[in-house]
Length: 226
Image 1 (spheres, rainbow, N blue to C red):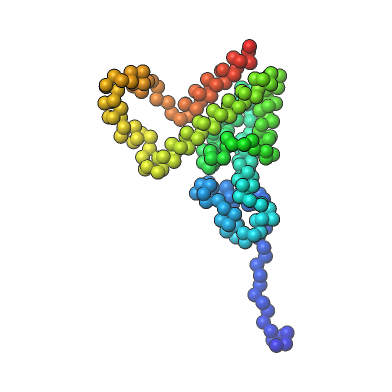
Image 2 (cartoon, rainbow, N blue to C red):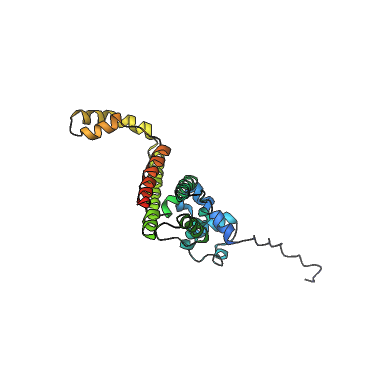
């Protein structure tokens, strides 16, 4: 066929723009919606409407993607305050809030040290706030706060997941098992525990977190004062 008789080929769509930031953003959206199990390079590529092989020019493995996701969320954790106590509290609270926004974060924090730029910036701000304090106190103090926050948020997220899996919230759970505890405590075998359950304060998750953090910071302050 001569050129003026030959039909033109169908127009090829332009390639969608791509960057690590867009890839990580898509992965976070998937994880926020359906958890880490929903995150794969293939699913992220589909979210971005690109071929999976294009992603390998930006990210080599899923492990790299998870590291980038974690560091991206650390950009939301911005220490504030004028004293070391205010800064440590702000990081603890901001981390907890970030986990509440991104439930999957509870599964990633607490392993090997993260070395992304946002994570390092947060750590640097905390270390700078404790300038002048003996390093023998600084290192275990920061580690203690990190361990407390990780344990606290994982427990909260475990409770959320239990509620979804069972279809019952904490109050319904307590109501279901309350009669059993009453019968058990009536035997007199667990008097100390019975007193706590009957007469102790019933704190909300927020109150529990803040109280535990106060006890920890008070202990650090006492150690520094020595």
